[in-house]
Length: 336
Image (cartoon, rainbow, N blue to C red; front, side, top):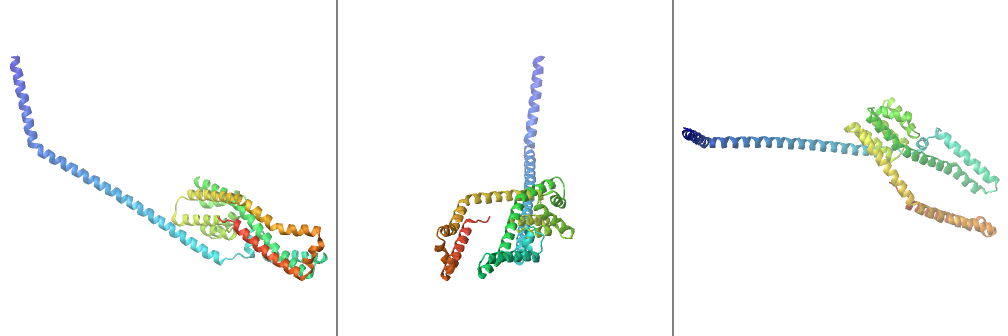
């Protein structure tokens, strides 16, 4: 009975296996066709997805290219306008006085220089100098010395501005990152900054209150502070207003560039200090020798001041010494 059951079960199993094999054989082609169709559909979908990704990436690249080209065109246009404006705007006495941070008028400054020159001329006449030398003293003291002093004050104020300007940019970056708009950041520098940056940003804020836009007000700053750093700042503000972008990142990069420029200037100044000292010694050596010879043998040196030929020699020597000093100055001065 047990053997019969096993035989029946085996027959049933073999019959089922045969039926399954027969069904698989009949349906194999259909199953393979469905698998190939599904695989083909998946490949088509993947290809469409890849094409969409490629298309999206291409569109992003085109958008970035257009944006970069727009920024470049804006930068070229701004540089061209500023170059034309700077060529037309020659620095006059009023601009120099404003750049020096003085509150006097050009007429008053000229009168003060003339009064100082007249005083020095009278002092030279009282000391016994000839009229021609007294007239030269008047020209030097009345016209040359005030302009030299004005240029010295302008340069000193520019250096102070460069020392404080990167710190002010850092304050603006932190203000913008904290959520303040650009106008409020400018007002913050105008109220809490250090001079001369404080006074220049106050002038920018006042220009805004008069109706000028922020880029135009920043561009006007170059008229009072004629530095490349200020020009960079106005260009960054103008490009951001036209093309958009992350202003805090742009100002942060500008601040870093200005600090690097300052470090480079300090390094060049330190490296050229030996050449400057040598130039100063070479330039002062003839005057020192003349003074020593005058102190030891006054009669020997007075011939240069009493004889007309001595006057000619002194004039020619002064011209050649001036040329030599200018040449040495140009050789040891570097612009960054």
